[in-house]
Amino acid sequence: NAGVMQNPRHLVRRRGQEARLRCSPMKGHSHVYWYRQLPEEGLKFMVYLQKENIIDESGMPKERFSAEFPKEGPSILRIQQVVRGDSAAYFCASSPFQTEGRLSNQPQHFGDGTRLSIL
Amino acid sequence: TQLLEQSPQFLSIQEGENLTVYCNSSSVFSSLQWYRQEPGEGPVLLVTVVTGGEVKKLKRLTFQFGDARKDSSLHITAAQPGDTGLYLCAGAGKLTFGQGTILTVHP
Image (cartoon, each protein chain N blue to C red):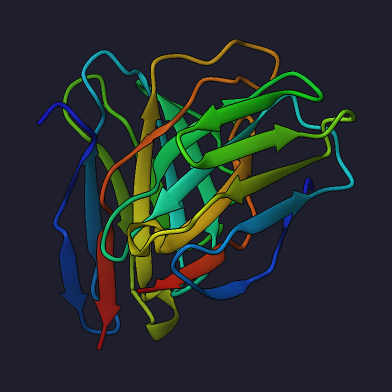
């Protein structure tokens, strides 16, 4: 399967623990996006990364949340000291490139998400 | 902030009926994308519309982009149970998503 791979598919954490969500983009894609979805709602943009760079993190909470996309390996969305309100499905998408300086029309390909449940 | 409003939010119809889902914004988008999402899966891209007034067809699905590039519609002809799912429109770039339309087609 050459699509966007997310793991784990399901993650259960207790309040106060850390959650790490991983995303491997499609082969040849260098741009990764993270979204959050609550049940029966649309997706909310969190962060956009290129290799080793955060391009736009305007949708990500300032505290407890961080994201990285290292030169080697998957992109990681990290949530520290999780709370019940963090329970959601987190989706990663990738695209081959974005044109600098303007919004791109490049379609994004989504993974099947990680369902995070906080006890 | 660019916002997209989708309507209706819920749609429950019988097999064979036609339906239209709307996606509206006060902002201009360079393109709009339509996705379909099934439970437990990620959104799957159906189509990208780029040019104002553009119409694209995908079998029984017809997508239209408004002349001013602020709105779009998805029309499904002779709906089938397999069309059931969450339909999402999204604006270009970091993808501003509408809240989605949950379509249920009953056999």
